Image 1 (cartoon, helix red, strand yellow):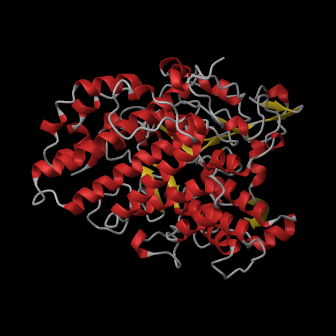
Image 2: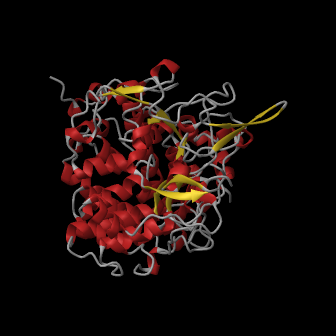
Image 3: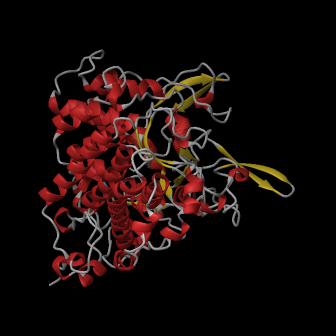
Length: 564
């Protein structure tokens, strides 16, 4: 059954779930007589599970995931999302709607997962194993355990670790005011859920032909378990989990993943659920009215075509400095060519991508500069170009192209601020580079270029793919058939830059995963200092990345209230 059909069947159930944990708790408790009647078959049990997936599509989580990273911290633009100004200057308040929204949405998902974990076995007991087998139940339970673990992982890594309240039932009024668990208890809870998911999803692999692509897999649980260990600095345990997923050295019992040749296909509708994807949020199987991944489109979208298109966030041009470049002779002219990933990542880079704006009278092709953005750092201030001044230096901006549409005709019917491009949360390149980081920490002296136990080996795999031409706009340097990029092997880059192995890892994670949400957790893991980000008042190093517990949580739960 397609996900969109299941979503329609769930409208009545999902109505019970709001952004308020208090509302969810009390309203679902009022209907406790319903589940025993409603959840009486495999199909209805699956509806309880699908309800848990629905929270992943919430914009609040994605706002923080994508935007709470250093890629955006020097921008001064934020149209249509008021809390971004406070976020941008690290004046993040416990009264901000997005601070409480993320907290409440994750607890909403915990409640949904708990309901599924309770009701699905009951449904099997009513329906009987002839129509609801143990294998089918195990697959459903494994997904629910993962989705609960994912929700707690977000809470654990975004908020203070000692303020998380653990719930594994449909809470009563008394349980609603439980005291938070210790960081050790919360870690163990997430770890246990992910191990449960691993053990139950043995037939839920990305290679299982009958397994629907939107569902999490055994590989998904394994990757997040690696993330959990890595977050706490246990590189040996993290490496053991990541290795199971890696091509050539992995374990087929956890799935089979590989880098796709076309880097761009990780960020398009056509590239959904490809073999590099380990965990992604599905949008394009939903009805047109529910293609609500607007958080992606609205911060990448075209700027001057309003009301059909609008803009949100922009990146200072100096952010391009981290990307490598080289000189080629093109058409008899010495030309600067960037790391091919630049052309997929940014609007407004020299010789970059164009946007096609469809009007009633025809198509208008616009490069980013024609739309009002500026390509160069040295445009005189008298031009009136938009800029940001950092430490007395004026910078201009690039737009974000990654995960954006290139043609206004491609916008879904819900509107230009929406998109049906899936959100890739974890992909293999992320895992490869995390594994490389683990190896760099465990054995930094191993610089073997052909040794899978060396960090160099995996960094080079990612760089080799980055040199391959993309299926993209034909004028782009990155789309020239048969013309590979010129990124050197990482050992040559390290020698040229004087970098350590960890510096090479940090560089590659930055350019490969720019604005995909990797940067925030990287900064926390690396415990970056106050000097990591320049010219941003309020920034106090990696500690600035922990959100405050929402005021409404402190007001409604006296056992989690630490106000003076």
